[in-house]
Length: 344
Ligand code: DP6
Image 1 (cartoon, rainbow, N blue to C red):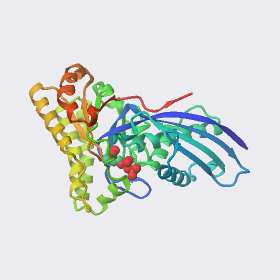
Image 2: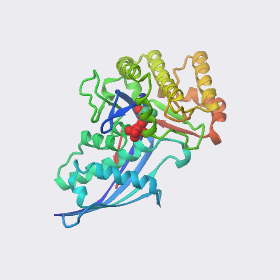
Image 3: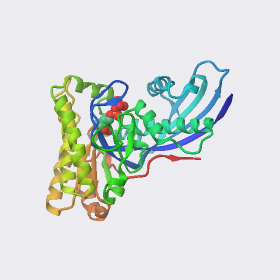
Image 4: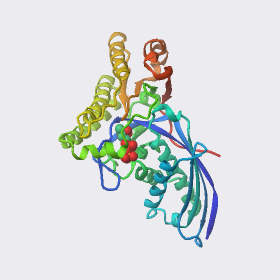
């Protein structure tokens, strides 16, 4: 049999509220995590494929933003080889993969979640053509995205993705589940202003980062804490208890960095301006009573989270107080979105 064609998908990044930090086995998380799926920070990926049982072995050509990228290319090829048990036709496939991000390459925004989930969506779409089925299998997309990058499992889910087996019904270590329908609608268009403190790619590589947990004396306590917080934050999100939500979200970000600060080796990813923004957010929240809070990835940039209803109130303060702390005044205005989109 022979199949050929081109599929193209846009898939977003996501920002974790309770963080995935520590993994084992074949990309399995040590604790459950939950995130907001974003709208603006996306990867657009196309795969032109030719599958021919006469072809022996897989051939991959990968370009990122129009250029060859050996490091990324290597990772993609390893990934595609690793999932041939799920998609056996990859063994006889010639793939031309082109990917680009909506967000600037030098913004320090982690791109593996959007990039790997976009590839996973393309692959599941090809599988759909081969099997002549109508529906995209979201569970499989999330599973395949996870095998590329853990956090990518959550990016294929609209609104809010939860990944990792825990007390929540349907939760799994293999794939993320949709959690949006169980929370107050205030979270369905929550805003995330991403304050670019440093454009340098100053983040610990995920392999190194998760590996730090294996030797951490806090490991067990951390996994228990994360699972308890998952329970607490989902309860807070059901009732829109924003005080409780903020307290968990901010402490999660600081715990992640606390763990990195005292890891062996230690990573200091917070910049002076990261701390200044954290202080400014806390002062403003106290004075204005506006429920704005922060979270962080494994890097220095602040994700400033708040309900859409406060967007107007926050704008002036953000542009006068927060913007000067950002690299070239750069703030990416994002919000919760609906997950991957097929492009034509
Ligand atoms: C701090 O998903 O990038 O952003 O599975 O090794 O690719 P790999 O790791 P990755 O780790 C993300 C860590 C985090 C927290 C989170 O997104 O939950």
